[in-house]
Image 1 (cartoon, rainbow, N blue to C red):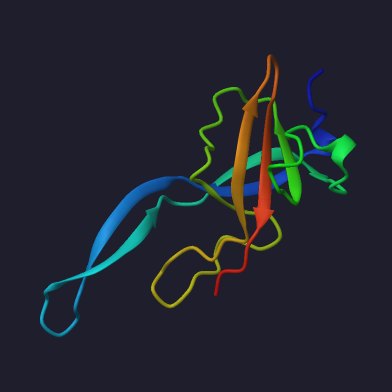
Image 2 (cartoon, rainbow, N blue to C red; image 1 turned 30 degrees about the vertical axis):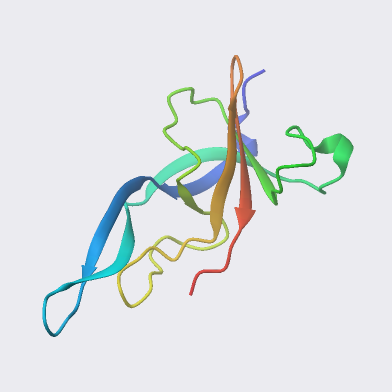
Length: 126
């Protein structure tokens, strides 16, 4: 069964691009720290299900904790377990280093025949 347009809402996601070695601002020497790089936010229309977390309603079992379940019929959706999402906040908000101030991370992506289930967990970034 396909998703109805009236049951979907805008969700923004950023894809993982890699890591970048950090340098000291004064000397220019590399430090042992790395910064995670994400791509630009991309808008997608998805169904956002607010699950209760009961064991009988969890499609992944009890070992994968998640707060919301996203459903999309776009079988070419590039979201993976390294992506970050903006569901309850806008993607324009970022911290002082220019990092995206996302509010959800992906815990599992499960493709089926006609749709993809994406479980996400709320995180605090700031």
